[in-house]
Image (tube, rainbow, N blue to C red; front, side, top):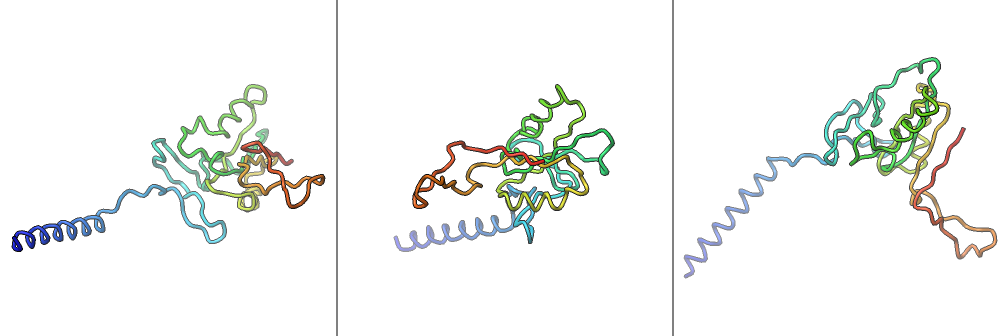
Length: 181
């Protein structure tokens, strides 16, 4: 009986050792291969990356945006809008045509054919990180202005001047759209 228990224990130990070695040697595919760490912005999208994200084709341009390659300097007659934001703007888990920037661009083309909407969204970005992106690329892309699409969780609670500061009110909308120009 003791010998049998020893064999079972040895078999279990062998299986655990083989499993541990296998897991260390065979690395699972990286779920966020399109994301790099960044010393200033914490993270950013990898430049010129192409692959699959959440089951959909995904590619980035030389600026690290989920976007087609952009002409610089901006061609004459082109109106360029830079859409900054978080994962809602970036559109990870969506086909490129279903992202907010592409849908806005398609809607604008119906009445303004010379408009290009640039998807500069990155998952988990806050307004300060969006500002840093704008500061980095605005000169080279020459947009008419940024459009910020941000989730309400990125915005601080709003305090009404009528209410007591101890009882701040929160916006009821799940997202906000702000344009600057």
